[in-house]
Amino acid sequence: MPTCVSCNKVIMPKERFVKFFCPSCGAVTLWRCQKCRKFVRNYACPKCGFQGP
Image (cartoon, rainbow, N blue to C red; front, top):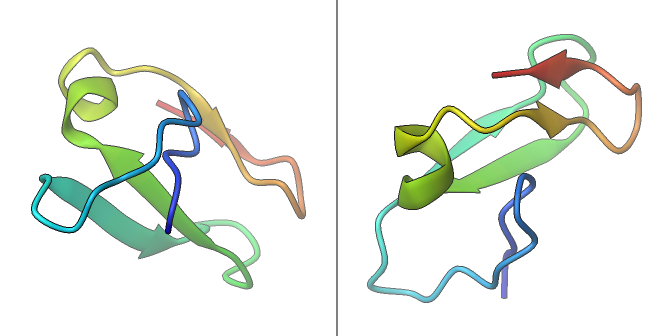
């Protein structure tokens, strides 16, 4: 199961989320839950360390 890169919560299949590649390195798929997106919580790429809102 994927986890949110901001809060580490497991993302369930019917839950709303966004999935995208790291804007800096493009090597890692980042998952964010709807709540972290709504509150604009920061995230960091585990490979290159890129940080974004």
